[in-house]
Image (cartoon, rainbow over all chains, first blue to last red; front, top):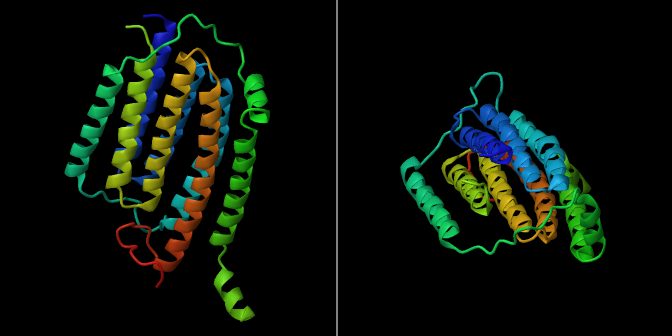
Length: 173
Length: 102
C-alpha cells in the first residue's frame, strides 16, 4: 500500500464519515458543519484524480458559497433561541431498505462492469490551462448558457427572497 | 489492493445512497437540500474519475464545472423559496407544506 492509497482511504473515510453525520445527525447545525468536512474530503478526492482546478472551485463555491447559504437558511428558518434545532425523520426502516438496495445495485453494477481503463497516460501538471481553452472553444455555448442561468438564478433568488414584494404590488394596484 | 477506478466508483455510490437517504427521510427542507448537494457531489466524483481513467480526457472535468455552477444556482433559488415558505407558513417541514398558496 503506497502513499497514494493511504491518502485516498483517508479522504474517502473523511468524506463518508462526515456524510454519515450529515444524514444521521438529529441537530441540523451539526449536519451543516459536517457538510463542510464532506466538501473538503471530496475536494481532496478531486486532487487525487488530477483535477486541481475543480478541487479549488469546489472549496471556493461549495464551502465559501453554498455552505454559507445553507447556514443562513438554517439560522433564518429555525428559532435559534428558544427551540432546539432538531429535525425529525420519517419512515426510517423502508428508507433504509430502499437505500441499501440502491447502494447494493450500484456497487454490483460498478463491480461487474468491465470498465475500459486507459493505462500509462501521464497526467499533465495542471489542468486549468486546457480547461480554459475548452471553455472558449468546444464548450463555449454551454459556458455562455451557464452564465445566463447563473445571472437569472441569482436575480430570481433575490426577487423571491425580498420581504416587501407583496405590499408594493398591492400599492401599485 | 491498488486504488483504481472501482474504488472511486464505490465511494461515489455510497455517497449517492447517503444523499438519497437524507432526501427521503428528512422533513426539514434544508436537510433535503443538503442531501441533494451530497448526490451532486457523488455524481461529480464519477465524472472526474472517468475523466482521469479514460486517458486524462478533460471533458469530464468540464462537465463537473457545469454541475458545480448549476448546484450553486439551485441552492440559491431553493433557499430563497424555503425562506419565503417559512415566512408564509412558519414552518419548513416539507410534509406540512402541501398548498401553493394560503
